[in-house]
Length: 102
Image (tube, rainbow, N blue to C red):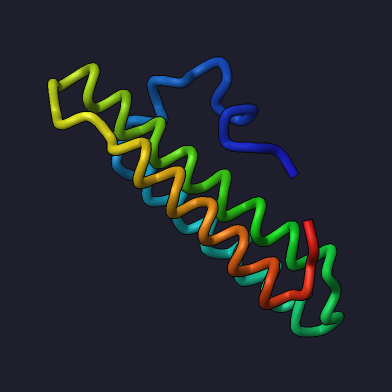
């Protein structure tokens, strides 16, 4: 499956359009539902890791977006320390729930 960046690599300005943002959010929701369905169907640790990594990437994308807004509009800068802490807690929690030992 192609990533959003691959699809819009020649027209990145379209990523700021409201309709495109809604479409991207909808696609991410569908991807999450597909992964959850496959996980429930197979109860596979690999799928749990895939889902967890998708969530991590989604969180990183949101932080990047917040950073771009900060630079562009002068909004409050993202709190990276809290973000990193939350990310680590999420990963360790999911690993514990799925019995995946790092």
